[in-house]
Image 1 (cartoon, rainbow, N blue to C red):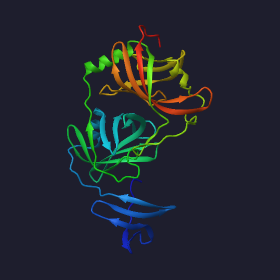
Image 2 (spheres, rainbow, N blue to C red):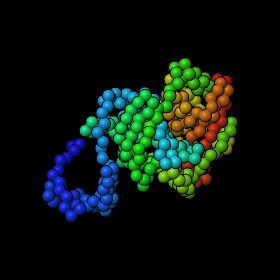
Image 3 (tube, helix red, strand yellow):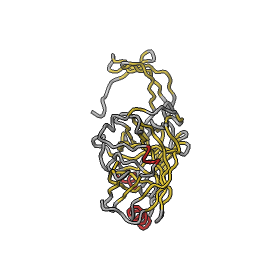
Length: 328
């Protein structure tokens, strides 16, 4: 069931359901916030915000179409976040997936989340789930041609231990067809070879707007032994290569060995290269692209020949164009 109905009463500052079930104790209440102490196995504080009635000239189908038409961006605390929403399902049944980008202190991190749109009592909500559990919620209060206006919104990635806030989600303009074709033609015209790189950050995790350094860890269970390693030596030797074909196949190659592959797509503003569906082929941020060289940035999991461990690095890569494109 989506909802269940109970009879409730307030007794000694406690909320009782069906005369006997203790739902929680009211710690504080205002016009915009209800804070309850709830015991369900462990004690916890839960915050509730009023669902506000809004009149829209749009339904959930039209709202989804609007969200899919462009990338979107918003700021929370120190994080600048970006959403590139897709129509396809991925992890959560009946939900679609999106690429989420978070930027703090000029370093970006990329995540895949699942999203959907719900309407409750006439109010639209944009919901996102990361890893099947961490829920982000945006209560839509207004919509115009360039932005979404939200109330009591919460992003679990950028707002850990923070109260929900009102957020403006701004539309990112798309490039025209001619510019998009130009970008695709430049990407697919040749093989790209690494000739220089810079590690902008390593051993990092963006969390709560703070950098927390970690020691290199053992290889992720998610990777197992079937996913080939991207060794540090490939960068030191500058043997990293990329191929992007007109059939939308993407390859990361080192020492003539294909390390990653996936179906690539370019975001509607031409700034990022993602995979659809998500894969171990990392997302690339395109900083500069010409007919002779490309500069891009990405989060890469770097492993080492002497130990079975890894560290996350945010790397700026400089690539030059090879004259001929190998058959792929």
